[in-house]
Image: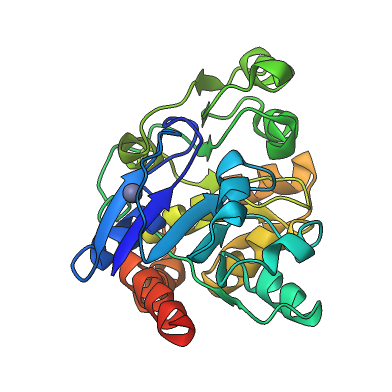
Length: 290
Ligand SMILES: [Zn+2]
């Protein structure tokens, strides 16, 4: 089958070393796949169009105009998009919560497919220089302010894409004595994560950060998430995540008391959430549809 895969976000903002990339590399063994990761389009007529989309990306809209078979990898949930989502032949959600929600709303053409890239994220030995690391964008939705208050005086590192309209998230970390950096290539991220005793992911309730949660598990590092963010709790429950109240005190307490590793998380990834599992789920979806 000839597959075109479209993403319109510039590389660097959209990280392309994740589980989906690993899964696509596996699919490349059976299918002819071409990628358009930079907004660039060719006049291809593939058998299947794949799009990766958030809520209102350009690629997402372009997919809707495509007359042939099309699959959407959707990081968001069904709530605001239910009618548009009906126009896809298949939608892969990252979260079971989203798939269940979509089915309840009468969307039949959806399933959960997700995983992490274990070629990049695996247990590695590095000196433990940090108590905690928070990988992820400096935006309000990542609650970096909460992180800053929780880790004052600890050896903490925060790194990710700096969203310039929300510079206060970056400032609050700097002012709180946290080592900060902007985005780094995702393939380099594990070397930093391995230098830390723990990973935290503190999204607001509506938004995820589930990729990072899986990446920490794949590296056998304890991961801490807030109990009011169901999209990350879904995975934390399965993979030995530490689920806490979204308060500076509770987060700090969890960081100071983390176990040395997270074998349950590592096991969960190996058994259910590698790029191979991701690829298998994608294939299942295509087989049902075609
Ligand atoms: Zn193409």
